[in-house]
Image 1 (tube, rainbow, N blue to C red):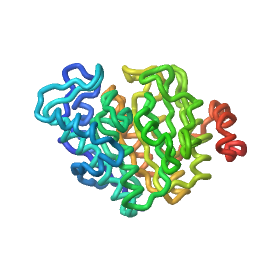
Image 2 (cartoon, one colour):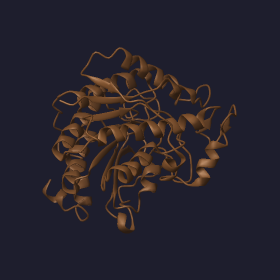
Image 3 (cartoon, rainbow, N blue to C red):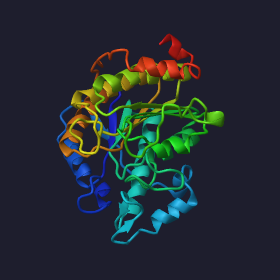
Length: 339
């Protein structure tokens, strides 16, 4: 069996949004410790590199690139109430995007079964023109555009299980029929986007699949939506790359939200996506997003890595709440009538 790959780099600690900020360098430090002491199934390391400006501009405006570049060397710049930079944040953001692009190259060639990029700052709130919500550049969007341009991945599925809606990823691909963005997120919650009735527009209609859940949603709700909605759509559409924006802030121990996933829930989500990728013959690219309880983050990543690099069987979720979303989405995805 082909091994799984990981990308992690101590330089991801060099972005520091300030004392007391939840998106802190320690998030990478605990994952470095985890990988250093890994005793699970085989993992191989893929080195990160800086993304080129052309790679960033495939998903972002020149103005945003300049805004983030202008923070270089400055002790602190505040972009919005939640998003701040330090002296090396611009370079770290390039490394995060470039690390995911490099891993995309590695899995697209078939050298690895899948790959997990432990990068920061996260990316899914960054729009084409605006850094926000702890995010500077949209790592998953940059990697998806690269996979399409460099590897002929005509169809890319991005599943976002971060507890916050990835408004940036949605906005970047809202009119695109080439990237299907599906988000499971708590609502109401920051950033206030991601309505179930937002389906995309123009040629992209149907390629935005928002699956909001209420506060208190737990493992059954998240797993039901992946198995009962995302997986049938993927089988019908047959993407050439599966990309996961893997946030861990839906964990019951996370301080920034109110969902109730436990460690094992992330293993079930990962194993479901691993099996789906095998069925489709598509590689999987996993990108770290949120997750602000260090202990819960570390334990949940262990579950994810063991699932993606092993053969754990995922639990089968109950039919609801996936059934309600299947009914709403069936006019756009008739396969859901049969799911």
